[in-house]
Amino acid sequence: MNNFLGTCIKQFQYYKSLGDKTFAQLSSEQLFWQPNDSSNSIALIVKHLGGNMLSRWTDFLTTDGEKQNRNRDQEFENSWVDRDELITY
Image 1: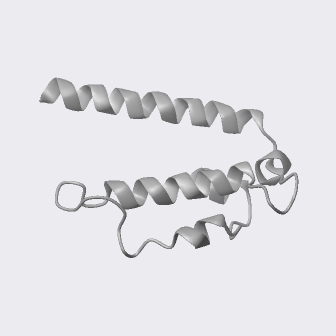
Image 2: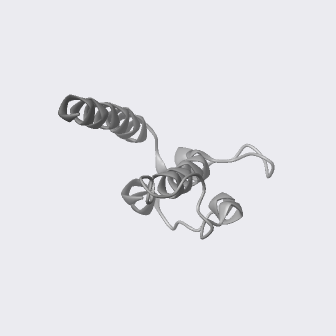
């Protein structure tokens, strides 16, 4: 079990490092850019993925799937003010 947990932590750290490297290459303008009103910016995709993971991993040992308090539609509204807020999320 301990080896499994260590492997999971390594995988999370690896994917976080990929995300950090990606953000480092993009300007704030690029993170929030949308080609048109029907498209999502990188920032909105990150917000959606974060909402999904928060919902799925909250109480994952006792509950399954999406939680009732998740507001999925709100994840596609740009409520962030700047790059730092996105990176912190």
